[in-house]
Every structure is written in structure tokens, then in C-alpha cells.
Image 1 (tube, rainbow, N blue to C red):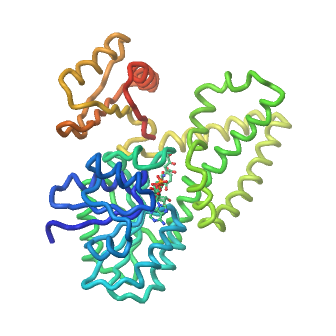
Image 2 (image 1 turned 45 degrees about the vertical axis):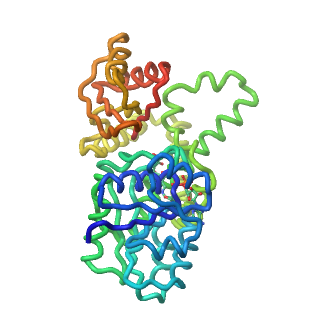
Image 3 (image 1 turned 90 degrees about the vertical axis):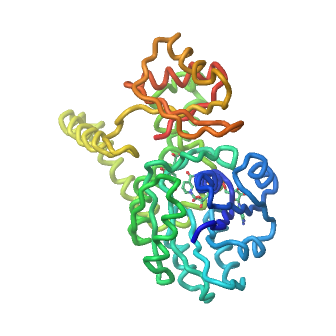
Length: 367
Ligand SMILES: NC(=O)c1ccc[n+]([C@@H]2O[C@H](COP(=O)([O-])OP(=O)(O)OC[C@H]3O[C@@H](n4cnc5c(N)ncnc54)[C@H](O)[C@@H]3O)[C@@H](O)[C@H]2O)c1
Ligand SMILES: O=C(O)C(=O)C[C@]1(C(=O)O)C=C[C@@H](O)C=C1
């Protein structure tokens, strides 16, 4: 089917980024629904959505495909609301929630036969929130998990993938349970730990006022995600609470083991512990397919105006920063474009970020 109407319900960071990507296909019309009318206005003014709705039923009935991109508890509420809406034909519904079990349980209980549900989770994001932070390239090369249900056929999954093709993500199919277990380990739990490290530093600052000034690269790297949206993350921990509890227990035991290595100066065991972690971490693939770090990318927002690219390269040249590769990801007349710069080293990437920001550019490093 051509000229599809796609409703994005919840046009924040993820919904807005999906809307921007989906709209790259000129045959797509994107409808936006959100409780926040300012987000709808922003979406319309910036060409992120084509039509804005404040009435969910009306929006849903006008759509061929519905993407629920609100927080998880609200996604479940929207799914329940869809159950009582009359649709003249089948409608494919998907979501973006970071936890799948509770969403899929709700979907399987629906009685509306017109709803075809396929769970979804694009595995990329940011600590930022809201439509202003949305980027069309957010999901490029990222894993996009799909969890088909009893309510969907292979053809429906194919149709959904077709609609999401402009995101340039890589689709994989998982069972909700395995999804929640794995994201629990590599996404949700690290957020808890990052927040706990910040709490520890905050406590120590009471007696060591200079402490924040010493919080350099290491602390910043490991705690970036502690700056994420607290309400959203409470919701994620709640929906994946059983896994969180198990992981916390395992972590406490792991910390007790580490404590004994430190207390008894188990030198070789400590080196082995660190080596094993380093080897495993260095081998983890990135979004670009290589090991971490494959190369060091920096995304720079630029205006479509004469000299915009020249000015970026002048700044980098002034500081003798070499660029390995460049790619213009998106430039449309009058609209901000995105430039992807790849550097040889992390140091060059960070310097590039610093100096471009000092010159008024908005940049992003996507890990
Ligand atoms: N932030 C990430 O890194 C990330 C990554 C992948 C998936 N997710 C998932 O995507 C979803 C959205 O997260 P986000 O980061 O975009 O959050 P966000 O706060 O940036 O956006 C959420 C949007 O939903 C709207 N909203 C809230 N309740 C609503 C309701 N009842 N009806 C309609 N709209 C409503 C808000 O006004 C906001 O615009 C969550 O389910 C989250 O688990 C987040
Ligand atoms: O990059 C970040 O800030 C993220 O936290 C993104 C991240 C992740 O843990 O990787 C967070 C939640 C999602 O559901 C998917 C991706």
C-alpha cells in the first residue's frame, strides 16, 4: 500500500525521531498525537508531523499504522483505549517501550479483532527528552527489536519493517521475555548503577567540596545516563522490576567479591578481573558493526546556508583536528541538516565537539 498514514502517539524524543525518519519517505503522511500541545505545535512548525491531533480516537481512526511512543504505563493505557475504538479495516499497531512483557501481555488480552499488534523497541536513545531532541538519524544502524504476537502475521511484520525502513535500523525478532532479560542487563541496570555512583559522589561532596571539579572524563563517561528523564526510568524499572531485583542481588554479591579482592590485595586476581572485563568490553560491537570503539563519530547540526560546511572545517583546521570521514545525513532547504564527522581518535572527537560547541554548533556523540 502506498501513501500510508502513520500515527505517532507520544511525539517526544523517540516518537519525534521516528516521525522525522518515517517522513523521509514522501509517500508517508505522519499524524501526531500528544497530551502536550506545545509538542504538537513544535512538530507542525518544524515539519516533523503533517497533522496534529488532540483527540486519540479521531487520530487513530485516520491512521493505517499506529506507533505508540509514550512512556510504558501510558503506552499500555493507549493500547487499552484502542481496544474500544471501531476501525473499518485492520490497523497495525506497534510501540517503542523499553520493556516488552507488560505491553505484550496487554496486547494479547485485547478483544478488538481489527488490531494487529507487533511489539517494537528501537535500541538507541539519549539522556535527553522531548521532541526538541528528536533526530531523524537516531536509529541509524541501531538494532530495532520486534516482538510479533498472536495478533500479527509475517506479512504484517514485513509491512511494519517497510514503514520503518527510513530509520536505517537493523531489525531482529525476539521473545518479550528474552528481550527484557537482555535489556535488563545491558540497558536498564546500568542506569541504576550510574545513578547510584552519582549519589555516592554527592554524599562525599558534603565533606569534600572540591570533588566535582575532579570529576573528569571517567566519572562523566560512566554517569552520562544518570542525566536521563527520571519519570521515564522509574517507569522502566517498574515494568522490569523482577529482573531488576535479581540483577541487584547479583551485583551486591559481585561487589562483595570485589571488596575482598581489594581488602586482601589479591593482585593477580584483580588484574585478571580487569583483563576479562576489558577483553569483553573491547569486543562488543558498535552500531557500525565493529568493536567498541570502531571509530569516533560526532554529529553536528548545521543550517542549510552558504558556507556552513566550510565554517565547520575551518574550526577543525584551526585546531589541527584531522577528520577521517564525513557524511551529510540530511539536508533539506531551510531546515537544519546533520553532518557526521568521523575522527581517528577519541581525543580528536572530544576536541572537535568542544571547539565546535564553543563556536555555537549543537553536536552529539552517540554511543
Ligand atoms: N529515551 C530513550 O533512550 C528510549 C529509547 C528507546 C525507547 N524508549 C521508549 O520510548 C518511549 C518514549 O520515550 P521518550 O524518551 O521518547 O520519552 P519523552 O519524554 O521524550 O517523550 C514521551 C512523549 O509522550 C507524551 N505522552 C505522555 N503521556 C502521554 C499520553 N498518555 N498520551 C500521549 N502522549 C503522551 C509526552 O508528552 C512526550 O511528548 C518510552 O516507552 C521509552 O521506554 C526510550
Ligand atoms: O544512550 C542513552 O542515553 C540510552 O540510555 C539509550 C538506551 C540504552 O540503554 O542504550 C536507553 C533506553 C532504551 O530503551 C534504549 C536505549
